[in-house]
Each structure stands twice: as C-alpha cells, then as structure tokens.
Length: 185
Image 1 (tube, rainbow, N blue to C red):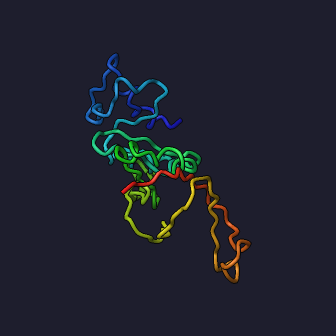
Image 2: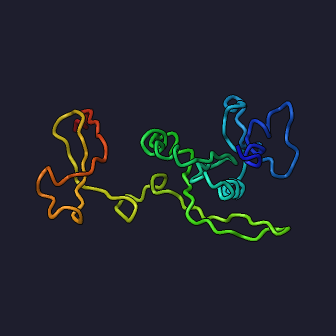
Image 3: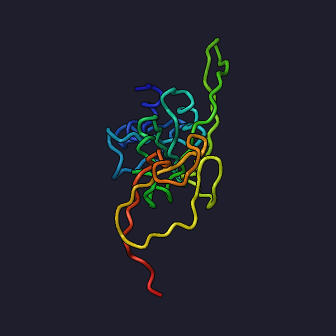
C-alpha cells in the first residue's frame, strides 16, 4: 500500500520489459522464475530495506536475504504465524536473516518533514545462540520415551505459589510432535 515500498518491489522495478536504470535498482535480487506481480519481494540492500521498514508503521521485521539484495517486509499479523510456520524451515533459515525492528525515533528531514529512524536486531530465531537468554528459554535435557503428540504448558512461579502440580501449569505454549525415530548406534 505504501507507494515507496511498491516502487521497490522486485517485479515492478526489475522486470525485463521495463528494466530499472537507477543507482538503487539492486536487480541482482530479482528472481526471474519466481517473482511475479503478486510477489512482495523488495530488491534492495539492507540499508534500503531498513529504511523502507522504518518508514512504515505496520512493518515490524524484515526477512533479509543473506547473499542477494533482496528482502521481505513483515507486518505484525504475518509475524504471529512466522515463527511456527515459515521461518522454522531449514531452507528459509539458511537463506534469510530475520531482522526485528527495535527502536523508532522521529528524525527531521529536508523541507521540514519528519522521517522515522529505527534500529534492527538479528532475531534469535534466525541466529540460534544455543543457550537461554532474555528472549529465549531452553529446557535441557528433554527426552520422550514414545512417539506421539504432546501438549506443552508453562508454569509462572510469580502467578502460582509453586510449579509442582499439573494445575499450576496454566499457560499453553503449543504442541510437540515426536516421530519416535532415533539413532541406531
């Protein structure tokens, strides 16, 4: 919906019938066999993608290609599904970094206008640190004796007096699917 974002969409900017000739084209990010008029890919380097996201109040994060000038801007409702559906796929994690918008500050721009400036942080989902920290809790060791579907719940000791009974685990986190396949050594 934002005209500036629309102007930087790969298909619109880099399609062979009307090739871009400006300095900010970044058409190396255009995928001829993939991009079409409905593809939301932006052809731009990290700086351009961050500027576009910072200037859009709906944008909360960026999927930035690791080797090409190509990104996708994410709005909040997309990100609610993202961690569980798309970004956990190995091919996506290996190809894109998830950059999360952190801080938005107004900056005076030319001719009395105000432009937004934001900082972006590589998401822990995209860059796995291997240990617990303020945005990710790990529980180790977790082992399953049988295959199946298991409900995962969480107990907050600040809400309940103890976490010793099943009734204390008030927060549903999700479901784990266990295949039962294991190493045969």
